Amino acid sequence: MTETTILFLRACLALLAMPIYLLSFLGIWKPFSRKVFFPFFLEKLSGIHEKKTKKHKQELFHNLSDFSSPSGELKLLEIGTGYGTNFQFYPPGCKVTCTDINPNFQQGLLRSISKNQHIHYEGFLVAAGEDLYQVPSGSVDAVICTFVLCSVQNVNGTLKEALRVLRPGGAFYFLEHVAADHASWKYFWQQIFYPTWKLVFDGCCLTREIWKNLEQAKFSELSLNHISIALPWTPIQPHVMGYAVK
Ligand SMILES: C[S@@+](CC[C@H](N)C(=O)[O-])C[C@H]1O[C@@H](n2cnc3c(N)ncnc32)[C@H](O)[C@@H]1O
Image (cartoon, rainbow, N blue to C red; front, side, top):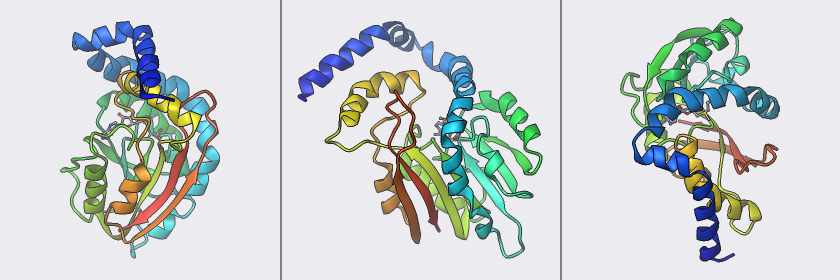
């Protein structure tokens, strides 16, 4: 498919989403999306999304306890916690500090905490993954990041911060959607959806090759699987899942 076809279809999609582009131009969309639209959308979708990702998250987090500190304590820091859909997979007794750039998830987050009494909730920090200055260096056993690296402004900066806050031997756990094979129809549609999707869904980029950032980050060990979680009719697949050790 030619570049012209992609540009033409992008323009068609932008026309359909014209009211949102207009609100964005007027500076109204981003605050509205952060406060109302995105939290509402995530909460509505979370049931379906949780069902689809459950098996993979169980597999991803099954060895989290292996990264407990020698004293037996397990301190987790989650980047982009949203509504806390990962809590159910954390081992009993672990201490969880939540962070998110968007403070408007806190009510749903508290509901999730009350449903997951097996974890110790340590608090919520409004912080970007790229700048976790409130978290001391080498202070956590594991950093968790699921469906967030697509939206951060700087993937390498976020991985650098994760490395800083992890203690030596600690692990960075990830599950992210990534760019499809460049020869596939999926990638063709990802390119068409890219600008409008990013605007509507709070900065979510469809074509990031996040495995490359993970490979280049200064972790000592990387366990990374390329998988595809079936999320029919969405451009947010395939995925990468795994963990990297500091
Ligand atoms: C798709 S949601 C995923 C939520 C949760 N991690 C999950 O798996 O259900 C993306 C989350 O990342 C947050 N986010 C976006 N950019 C961020 C950044 N730069 N730093 C931290 N969180 C960010 C959003 O506010 C949102 O809560």
